[in-house]
Each structure stands twice: as C-alpha cells, then as structure tokens.
Image (cartoon, rainbow, N blue to C red; front, side, top):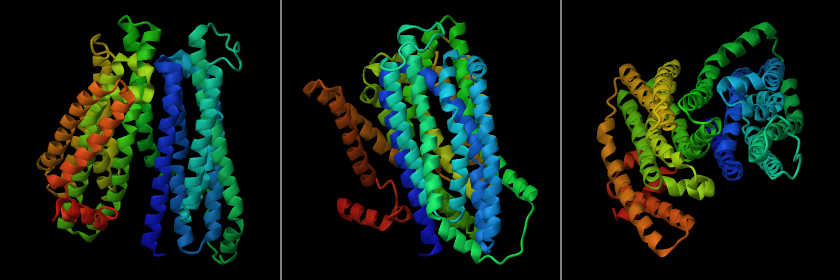
Length: 551
C-alpha cells in the first residue's frame, strides 16, 4: 500500500470512529435529558466542561507530540529512541493525570461555587477518576499513531464511548429513580432536586468507566503488538541517544500551542456558566430557574449543532492537505480553486442545516427530548440562534484548516481569542436583559464566530492574495435551502392535518427536506464538475448527477 493510500485509510478509520463516538455521545444525552431534565443537565454540563478542560490540557497536545517524535525516529530506523520518547511521555502523562484527579476531587466544591452552580460538585467528583486513565491511554494512542497504526486509537475510542454510555446511563437511571442509594445524599437536597443531582453524578460516572475501558483496550493492544515492536527494536543498530530532558522539552514545545488552541472553547463554556448563572439570578430569577434556563441552552439546543458539525469537520480535514500542496507548489490558481471549493462546500452543508433548524426548531427538540422540550420555552429560540452561528462556525472551521495548511496555525487561535472577548461582553450585556435572558449567550456565541470568521478570511486573503467570492457563491445553495425550507413548512402543515404524531411528522419533514435540497442543489448546479471530482468518490457522484440531470 502506498504512503498516500495508507494515510487516507488511516484518516478514514479515525473519521469513522469519530462519527460513531459522536452518535453514541448524542444518543447518551437524549435519554439522560429526558430523565433528569434541563435542571439536572445544568449540574451535568459544567461538571463535564471542567473535566473536559482538564482532559484537554492532559491529552490534546502531548499525544500529537508523541506521534510526531515517534514518527520522525521510526522514519530513520531509531526504534529504541522512539521507545524512549514513549516512555518519557508516558511518565509525564501519569503525572498530569494524577494532578488532574487531585484537583478535580479535592477542589470540586470551590470550583462549582466559582462558576455559580454549587450543585455540580458531586458530578465533578464522579468524573475525577477518569483523569487517572485517559492521559496514559492517550500516550498509547499517540505512540501507535506515530507508527501509522490507527486501529488501536479507533478501537479504544469506541470502547471508551460504549462503556461511558452503558455505565453512565445505567447509573443515572438507577440513582435518579432511587433504586440504589435512595437516601445517600444528606446535604440539604431533597425530593426531585436530590434525585436529579444524583442522576447527573451517575451520568458523569460513565466518563470514569469509559476511561478505564479505553485504557484496558490500549493495554491489551500493546500486549498483542509486543512481538512486532520487539522485532523492530532488534533491528535498530543506531547509536543516537538524546537526553530525557531534551526529549521532554521537545514534547512540551510541540504540545503547547495545540493545547492552548484546544482549551479555548471549554474555558469559554465555563465562563458562560458563571456569567449566565450570575446575571440571571442577579436580575431576579431563582437559582433553580436560572439553572433550568442554562440547561435548555447547553444540553438541549447546543448538542443539536454537533450533527452537521461532523460533516464540516470532515470537510476541514480534507482541505488541509489540498491547501498545503497548492501552497508548497506555489500554484496560485490551484490554491484559489481549493479555497473557493472549501468555502462553497461549507456553504452547501451549512445553509440547509441552518434553514431546517430555524423552521422546525421546536419539533426537532421534541423529537429528541420529548416532554422535556415541550416545557423548555427558551430551547427552540436558542437553537434558532445557534443555527445562525453554525454558518460562521463552518467558515471558521474551513478558514482555520486553510491557515493550518499554510503553516499559520497561530493566526486562527489569536482571532478566536478576539472573538471570545467580544462574546463575553455581549453575553454579559444581553443575559442581563430580562426579555433576552439565556438567549444572550447564544447571541454572544454567534457574534464571536462571526468576528473570528471575518478576521480569518481577511488573514487568508492577505497571505495568499486569493479571491474567495464568498458572497457570489452564496446564491445557489441559498436558493436551494430556501426552497427546501418552504417545502418543509408545507409538509409540516399537511402532516399536522393527517397525523397527530409529532414524531412521525418531524421525521417526514426532515426526509422531505433532504430530498428537496438534494434535487435543488443538482438543479441549480451548486457544485461544478471539477469541484465534484475533488470529493471522495467524486467520479461516482458525478455519474449519478449526470443521470439525474440527464446531461
């Protein structure tokens, strides 16, 4: 197998695993939200955000550094040095994991108090054991990726998520229903509030179970590969021996900017918790009412965006090597075509999703969350605002991938920081307006991505000199999306007359929308033949298009 095909195959394995993990994660939230409600999810979400922040610090940059350094050494046959890199990094990960566990376990109460949701402390403690296993598991993933063996990462990710879903949902159900430990909470919480609190903690316990499962899978895979790795080391006759201190410095130097970029959104989510909770309670909402509104924002509206985001992330991953190749060849025309294609494809994905989420926001929420969504008045409007933000999020994702392909990875990080500063200001102002309340956070998010996307596009044009034609390329996908939206509204009206089942109605609306949009996109030729050819299996797609349009 060629190096190119191997890379594509490895990327496909990780992409498939990522989609499975994303679907399992969303499937986890649906029954959980139905059980413990928006208020209970307001305990779960900040606890998981704190855990995610510590997890990102521990696992986002260092595995990439391990992969890079191991790959470099294996390329020149220095397998012993590759093993030393892994050994040093693994010790570093152990230390980070233990530190993270101690912070989350012993400081859960002050952290929960600082972000304004004191009741989330129990859920934070439930996630703490995961930090003992995930960092070391990630070091194994980075090692195998450095060897260009992607299956271990994919298998451990899937095993981790399956265990998280099974244990998390099982524990949440048993605790929320009072089947186990019915009287174990003696901190002044009673009735449904206590049950929701315990249910959220049970769900967070799934993270710890998943981390253990993923860790055990990686240990097992490392054991299965031991003979192959031993043979590689036996062939190594090099005399290179870099000091442990030098290796550690290189790991940190590579990992730091990656970790910094990955930490941005979890930090923003935690700032959101504090701002929203404090602003709402400050203008008269009760603590419980404020929690409920925050839960509607973060646990009902926000997760819906993760579905179309998977498609944007997959597109962004294909853009990086395309732009990198064009830039390396100094081929300005090819670079311009690649950039225009990336933005047009993102618009083709984002615009129908935006229109669909706006016109049937409430039915979509009820489809996933049932009666909990019926009694969540702010969730639908938050989803509609998030739908608008998705357009700019798609632009940010694509522009970031292009700038990374150009070797300018710090620029999108700086621009996102600027956007976040704007978000904090807007969120603070608008959540203090009674008529807007929690929607102010969603509006702030939309404004932040809008500003970041504008700054990214300006930087991209300044560096490359390409003409992106963003406004001009909007026309065809926008027409197709608006026709789709009208068709969905018409279908919704007809189905409402024919059936009383909102679930069936919504499913039919979505299917009709997909069919109408696909037909309209083909009818208006939203992508050219050359652009279709750049897609995976582009030739097959073009043959289907030719048959449907009789060209």
